[in-house]
Length: 159
Image 1: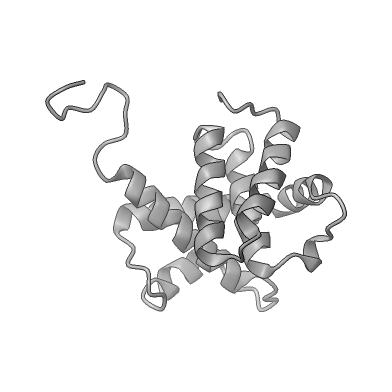
Image 2: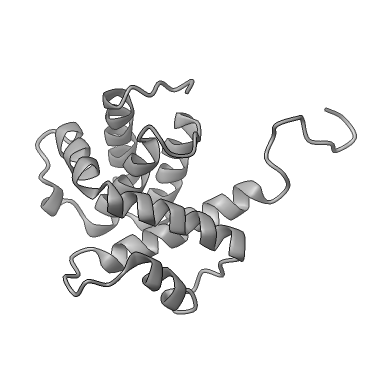
């Protein structure tokens, strides 16, 4: 549409930035929780650790991050199983902690039953996280595995 108006159904201004910030924040929470056996509640972690990270998180991003973390934690067994099946020759515990948690975040978001974010958006956002926080090989690694996870859960690039 012309005149700076958004097309109907398009996200409003700042939504993409809010969701990108939320995914980065959710990754930081999952990273911090990974391997902890002290029973830290993810919701409590998001509330308490909000100021501990360098990433400034507004209320909208914090709410979306909470949804992502809750889903990744609630579906952790299924998510880890999907990642393991898709990763060919890589055990989950051998993956870098950053890559493993980016994959958990993306795989949880790809599962049916949650908010319907397009597959391409989920994978592209995971790739951006991998570029920002991972190694030089992380983006390609994350892309390949999440593409196989999407196929395994019945999601197509158009969905």
